Image (cartoon, rainbow, N blue to C red):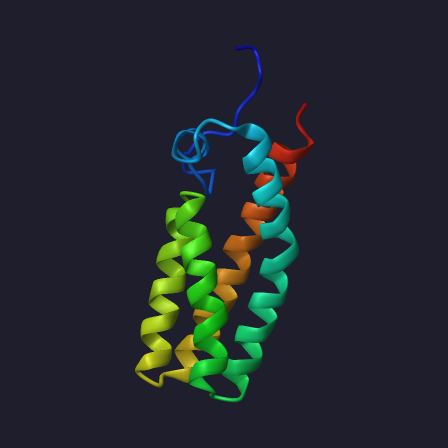
Length: 123
C-alpha cells in the first residue's frame, strides 16, 4: 500500500477512495472513464458557454446535465453542485449569473483535470 493516492480533502476535488469503491474497485475502469471524461468535458463546457452566450436554455442544459451526472459518478461533489446551481440559474433565466457559474465550473474542471491526469499516469 505504498502507492500515493489523491484522497478527498480541501485540496482535492474528488473522493478517489469513494469513486473506486463505487465503481467496483477497478482502477483500470476508472482510468478509462477518467480518460473519456477528460476528452469530453471541454466540449461540454464549450457547448454550455455557447448556450449561455445565446441565452439558449436547451443548448446550455443538455451538456451541463450530462456533466452533472458524470461528476456524480466520480464523486466530485463540488463539480456536481456547481452543475446543479448552474442548471437552476439557467432555468431562472439569470444569464449573467450563469456566466459566472460557468467560469467557476471551468475552474473546478481544471483542478479535476490535473488530479485525473495524475491518477491516470500513476502506475
